[in-house]
Image 1 (cartoon, rainbow, N blue to C red):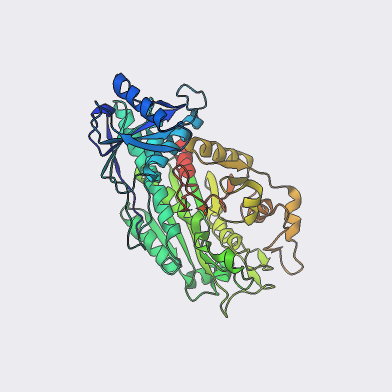
Image 2: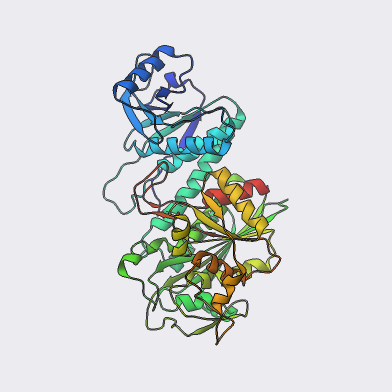
Amino acid sequence: MAGASTPSSYSTTSPVKATASVLVLGAADSTVLGLEGAKAARTALNDAAEAIGFTGSTGTTARVPAPKGVAAESVMLVGLGDFDAASEDVAATHEALRRAAGAALRALDGVETIALALPTATAAEVEAVTVGAGLGAYRFLDYRSEGKTPGELTVIGPKGKSFKAAHDSGAVIAAATNRARDLVNTPPLDLYPESYAEIVRTQAKTRKLKVTVLGEKELQAGGYGGIIGVGQGSTRGPRLVKVEYAPKGAKRHLSFVGKGITFDSGGISLKPAKSMEDMKSDMAGSAAVIQALFGIADLGLPVRVTAWLPLAENMPGSSAQRPSDVLTMRSGKRVEVTNTDAEGRLVLADALSDADSDKPDLLIDVATLTGAQIVALGERTSGVMGAETAREEVVSSATAAGESMWAMPIPEEMLAGFDSTAADLTNSGPRSGGMLAAAAFLREFVGEDTNWAHIDIAGPSFNSSSPFGYTPKAATGAAVRTLIQIAKAAG
């Protein structure tokens, strides 16, 4: 299992001297950027852009013959919109560069060599361009008989060690996000709890990380009622995977928990057929947390990180849990199952109990948890709930990383919607404010003083619409960049 993407190198050569099949240049307000000192070539490209009506609006591209004085065979112009390199909104500038680089690479299938010369004056801008290009170059071709990727990519930027280091960091971040996309895009026939755990083992081994996998017998013996209950309807049993990155001298401990439902039929509370089509993506939270940890390890960040992946396949088999069943959770609390399609919170609750027992400095769970997230915030903005300090740390890191996340409350009245006559809680709460209610349920499985945040990525994790910027159709790799940014800030 490996999606196709394009590794990049870094160069400080002048864009006009770059020998490539295509030289990519940015354009803002119909003006070509990045050819300082090459007035004739810039004028020729501006004239070409005007002749074909290219306005430089955000994400648009146009490929034209290379003018005299440019070594590349052709030039692709990519729109930066109203880009202003001197803007005080640094996060917006970085995101504009990511999206432009991504849009360009999405449009260059089969091109042998690409030189990417967007305007970069800082190391952070070089990193943004590299991330955007790496994400835009991604293709998932494992199950296709035909398909092409962009070829060799060179990012052109200023001289200096910090710029080269920023490029290398961006390449790691893009690779981590693309690996998460690979996992989500893999069909559930091939990605199920046992095979998923083996993929994690293999990828962790090359990084010399500690991996612990609990199978059905260990889960049963350990009292993981939520994970067992959700997974018992499938012939392919559940797993709990723990991966530890513990560099010497680390002063802060981050713990990431990711929902890993490798396919969600809804169980006995069966989903409508149309609602099942994208349910291979119900493990996107687990993909985000494990690949973020691998990215953090690849960057060598001086922070301890533990990832927890509760993995199960939610199927309506003869042994599946039933509405009215009562589960004894890892924490000892008892939960009455009133809807088997509210399964993600059950596996998360067990893993959160274990993660919380380690007393991390920051505990974050990531999950495709509720359709209510999409109703509230749309397809591209994740909801963040939890302790105020943790919530704000997540949102600020998301802004820096270029991911859209919005802080949301957990109103105190939400928990009452989980009242049960048979147990401590039901697993299905009120329909109104369903995203907030799900967070209220999860909060019952972490300590009152735990610095905990819950990220609902139900919409942003899987793009069922047209590609845009660096975002392809299908898996997006949502939350990977934010988690890595949190670790950067913590280090």
